Length: 137
Image 1 (tube, rainbow, N blue to C red):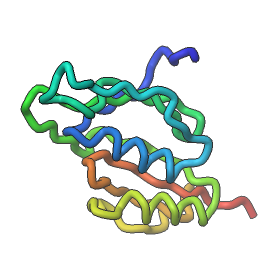
Image 2: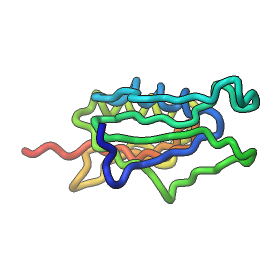
Image 3: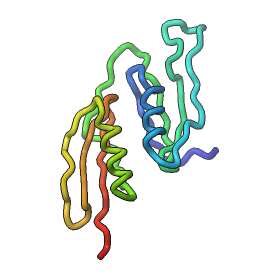
Image 4: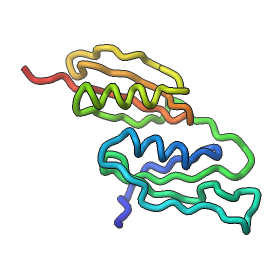
């Protein structure tokens, strides 16, 4: 598999596997391509994600678990902007990503471009802007 020149790389605080499993369950055309975990040769990190490559909507992402002992805080200055193909996908993503997280901007109209727009921070701290485009009349 060829890795794109620019790829989103996420660092989690010990829950990379759970996050990647959630994302690949919510987004279409998604899969975990590789997931390498620390083994028992490093007992303090055993089972944590050393490196993973996964796809969401056909787009490649990478992630790791932060193992340096400091908690990494994510913030809304960096977010993933997702365009939903229909209301069903918008609802699946919104409900799945806000569960255990925070709603930064509740679902709202954002005319003229978006019939529905929302901004959520998931339970891992990753920020998602979700947009459902206006349908052409």
